[in-house]
Length: 243
Length: 327
Image (cartoon, rainbow over all chains, first blue to last red; front, top):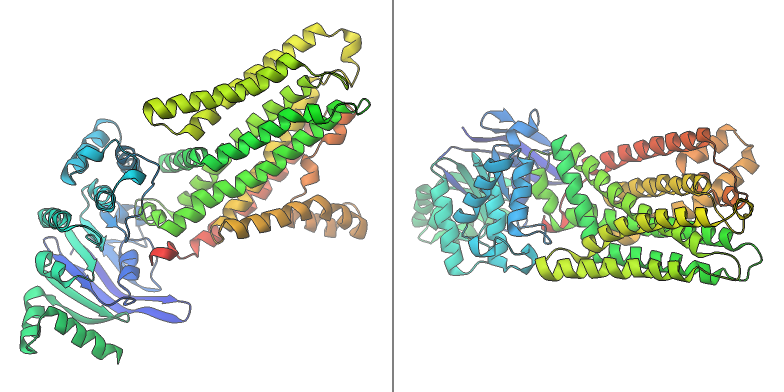
């Protein structure tokens, strides 16, 4: 199993935001991580990517415990945070080279990887520009490029297509589908259309608790059984939980 | 180790790219350059006044630069979420903190280095109480203009940062100018005038006093970096100013209250940095050499103080939730 999270808990002060969450993602899977705002999606993403330690529970990437061997585990993770935070004063190429160096690449290998990431994310035109001067779509693609530069085995994306135009969304989705051949992918999103377009599995979270964990077909079958669409099922399950 | 080096170089570059960093340096240099004017007709106190004012400017602007650099490289990264990117790479929180502090200290070292070179020049500009060295004054402000021109050309021609290029140019021009001027002045003056404190400040007296300012600004840099893991720029500046003002007077009152060398006075020195230890204005006024033992003692004190605050910085960052706005 490429990504294993077992019995994760997270508290902010006295508020429990992730409550006994377990998930498993294999190479070839694209897990759609859905839930209403404040469900605990971003917090879970941060815990899985090793950015934030869980209050309790374990995360293993490719069998490596992220708490015990963080450097080794993180070298296998590609993380695309929400809102695509970047160093705005750097050029695209300089930023990618910088993140590549943090992964230990240098010389020709680094140049090759930077070129490949630029090509895969269609950033050739913007490679020499300062990130600050780029559009939102380009910025997101730069952030995506840094997350795949080192060929991660686990790719964790927080709202990867948020704010993109339809063409850019399609390009990113195609890229995600091409990556899943050798990568386990988790996508956090509000957009159910995205789940339908790229995900093979669905994980529904509300108030830190797991409401659904299964294949996309099982999720759709559940909607069909209630004579509704995916949005209707989402509303039904999450509002039921809230009340 | 390489990760720390790369992160710290990047942090330093970010600090130097900040237009506010350049503006602060520029303001400090203009003030230092004008002090010889302000200190004219002061009855054989001109060099002393220039030294005092320039050192105070370096220290105070060093404090502002320290807070600005730490807010820009630590607080802002935590606020806008770029810290998430770094933390998802094979980078530990310890490496992050150490690297950011090193980057900030490198840029502050450059800041103080330029200010110190400017102070040296300023002392040479103040020839005596009735005259200034006009050619040197022109060269002083010419160096600032040339550095700005260089930064502008680099920015226009190759889209490089104006601020960092202008700063680096000043870091090259000012020490060269100061060293050459010192040699020329020393050669021109007779032995009689060299012994006159109004006419001449020997390099071996001035340089150690200026070097102590590095230690003071490093301490400020480390304190503001530790605070930046939890505070925004305004809060950070307030606390740093409070520590600065307290550190100026606390030890005097502590020594009076508890006795010099007592446990109470020692406790105060451990809690709040004793800025007076780095302030050698009186020694300069009397042309006293700073003993090597004092210099080493101050260095050890600074290193220990910085180490303690680095520990605090690590503790505060280890326990902090990252990227508050993106959560």
